[in-house]
Length: 223
Ligand SMILES: Nc1nc2c(ncn2[C@@H]2O[C@H](COP(=O)(O)OP(=O)(O)OP(=O)(O)O)[C@@H](O)[C@H]2O)c(=O)[nH]1
Ligand SMILES: [Zn+2]
Image 1: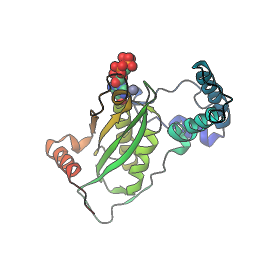
Image 2: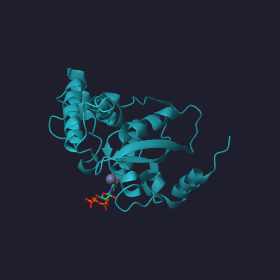
Image 3: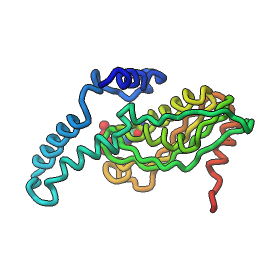
Image 4: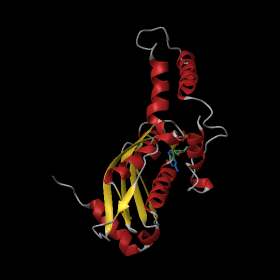
C-alpha cells in the first residue's frame, strides 16, 4: 500500500467517535483484494462442503470464487476507503437557504449479525452553510456506508457524519426505513415489519424543521 492510500485509510473514520465507527480489527488493510478473495474462497468452500454439498458439481464449483468476489468488491466494497465517494462541494451561488431533501434513496446493506440483506430507503437532508454538494453524492455516500457489515443505527449515523464533514455544517439529517431479512425471512419471520431510524443534526433537532423534513419525505412523487 502506498503512503497516500495509507493516510486515507487511517483518516477514513477520524470524523466518527469510537462507537460510531465500523469495528475494524488492527491491520484491517494489510491484505490485498486478491489475498482476501483467496482466503474467503477457501472458507466458503469449507462451509458448503461441511453442509454436505458436492463442491465438484458444475453448478457449485464456481460458487466459492463468486461469493468471495461479491463480498470483497460488491456487498462489502464499502470497507475499502479508496471507494469513498469524493464529494466535492461548490458555492451556494443560488443563495438557496432552505433545506434540500434527497429522498427515496435505494439502500442495500447487510446485517452484521446474520449476514442477511437489509433493503430499504434512506432520506437525507441538509441546510447549506454556504456550500452545496452534487445531488448524486448523497446517494453515493449512502451506498458507500451501506456496503459494509452493518447495523442500521450505525449506518444512519455514519451517513450523517460524512455529510456534516463534507458540507461543514451540523445541519444534516437522515431517516432510514428498511426491512431486515433476518427479521422477515427467519427467526421471528415477520414479513411486514420494517425498521425506522433517524439522526437529526443541528437545526434538524428543532421540532419545526424536523417535521418539515418528515413532511417532505411523505410527499408522494408523481412523474
Ligand atoms: N439494533 C439492531 N439490531 C439488529 C439489526 N439487525 C439485526 N438485529 C437484531 O440483532 C439481534 C441478534 O440477536 P440474537 O438473539 O443474538 O440472534 P438470534 O438468536 O438469531 O435472534 P432472533 O433473530 O430473534 O432469532 C436480533 O434481535 C436481530 O433482529 C440492526 O440493524 N440493529
Ligand atoms: Zn440480522
